[in-house]
Amino acid sequence: MPTLQPTLFDNRTIQVRFDEYHREHPEVYGLFKALALRLLNAGRAHYGADAIIQVIRFEHAIKADAGQFKINDHFSSRYARLLMSEDPRFQGFFELRQLKSA
Image (cartoon, rainbow, N blue to C red):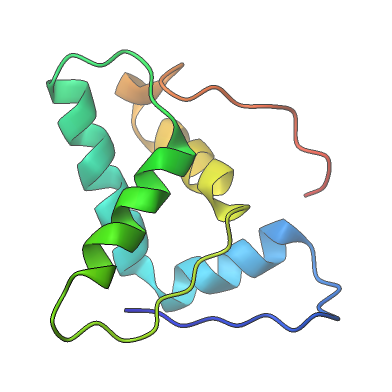
């Protein structure tokens, strides 16, 4: 699983850091999408993107061969936006706030 350790002095925007992380670790989005689809198929109309990220962390942590897994909490809204932009079934599934920075 991915390891990304931004430095304390990383002045890049969240979006730039997310884009890099997503490019380097597309499997995280695959897991995010699969979990969201399971929720949708179970009849959920709304769910939290943060909760899905926590499930991904949990699932990785209990694997026997688990290495270090890091993902920025701020990326959950980016994953939600990406999924909603790619799949119209998820419009309104996640509650989003207006982005403060790109």
